[in-house]
Image (cartoon, rainbow, N blue to C red; front, side, top):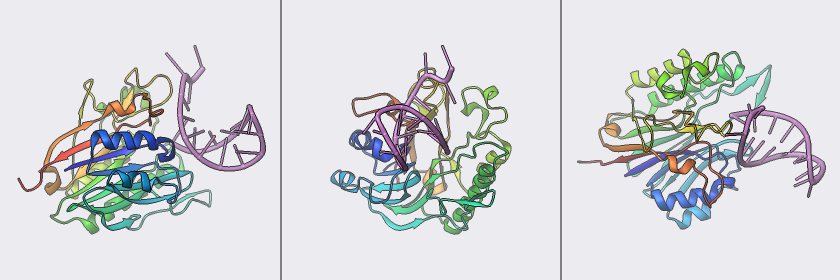
Amino acid sequence: MRIATWNVNSVVARTPRLLDWLGVAEPDVLCLQELKCSDAAFPHDEVGELGYQAATYCAGRWNGVAILSRVGLADVTRGLVGEPDFVDEGALFGAPQRRAIGATCGGVRVWSLYVPNGRAPDHPHFDYKLEWLAAVQRTVAAELTDEPFALLGDFNVAPTDEDVYDIADFAESTHVTEPERRALADLRSSGLAEVMPRALKGDRPYTYWDYRQLAFPKNNGMRIDLVYGNEAFTAAVRDAYVDRNARKDSTTGPPSDHAPVVVDLAFGE
DNA sequence: ATGTCAGACAACGTCTGA
């Protein structure tokens, strides 16, 4: 079974590339983030023609997540256990923000997550990020069994200093702080382990390169799209890699600023 | 020169968030 995750940065702008990639990579399950569209605007018919069912959880201009599957799509859950809302100076923003969807696909419980960015360590969005990660933890606690289980998505956290191109550029920045990394450690303490992908080129499996300042050609990347699985999941992993080719320009339109992470598994062997 | 992008609004450029 092949399970992948990809922050597409607008599924409307990315539909030709998404369809092309589905045909080339042939994932059985694909977790998507940053759809930036309504549920109705999602290309259900187009992915359906390629054999995929889709469960979406999105609304409008921001956020939005989905799970595509060609191996069944059951027990869809939208939102986390005790998920916080983003409140800034008393104002509520887009509650509930649509950032998490879970489903059972071919016997694997998967979650597609789009963790809040945080903006800056002293910004209310950063507190929201940490509270949101705590809700991920609660959801794991509520759902975890011995059956295969995995969280996949854009975590907006670089697990180690090696996961950014130059840690010196991240002083006073989000994505590399101790409390963010502690949230990942909490996931590990609760029985999940990270699936480390290999890079198809270079020595670091970055998953994100800013659009600006020629970050991609300079390989000024970050590894922030992550996969955490329980024992039943990680024991079945045969390969994992970042498909950086999907970050390149192509005839099917401009790329997302993220590349997909692909995990190949063999259950029952 | 953030060597950018996408979407919204009301255009046919300008703003915003990331």
